[in-house]
Length: 330
Image 1: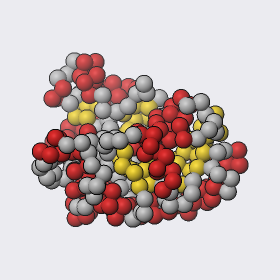
Image 2: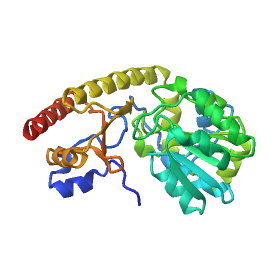
Image 3: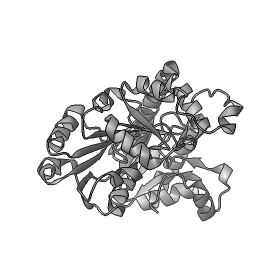
Image 4: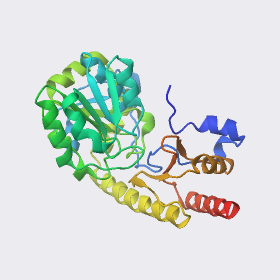
């Protein structure tokens, strides 16, 4: 299995620091969420029902005509490669590693390349996968650029798959409103922006025929009833979303400034994290781990991804650790 952020218990064992004493900045999940309604008992007692209005609320939220709720966008990432015969797939990298793994596992021919290589590669691809904003770089591609790539692929029955897991804070850049176009597949995560990763809920936005095929593949009851209930409530809470959006955007700017003040100016980032390319990534990751602070390390390129602290105590703790690191090394 690929390595992911959030493996807090493993870090607690490695550094011999109790689980409760950690500041986890490794996941890119919002560290604070919404006021949650009580889940009714029937959501636990009954099988999930698709007539519960979740689809309608989600369609209104994303501004689309058709979508499919799934058990986190990861479920769609793993299933989509099974809907095509063997294809030539390109992935704009570095990005979330599960995309390449899923297409490779199903026997597709795979190539990974930078954003700048896409125009030359498109004529040789059946599928292009883009994470936007990208994880971990935070790079945000314009809708116009992506729609141009989609048009070239769609001319010959190709797909553009756009993973928008980190898009909720900047919805004006989303391709959701174009997702009815043949060959355009947009993935949205519920867990990150809404701070509900444990609910395992996501959405696939695409033309109806593709969604029906994906639904048949995933089978009935793929999303738990309590998750459907909470998804419906939070997707309808437009005021809460606006507050969350404003707070995340302010905090990510604060994080960028904190890192820069410590000689770690971010190379990129988005509302939920900042990304720092540094040759000292391994050393800094180890040092922060010894302080009970977990960040996400990437080996290629050598870099760290910092999520947002949840409160003022977390901000102060991160600032102290970075100040101590700079004092020790210099």
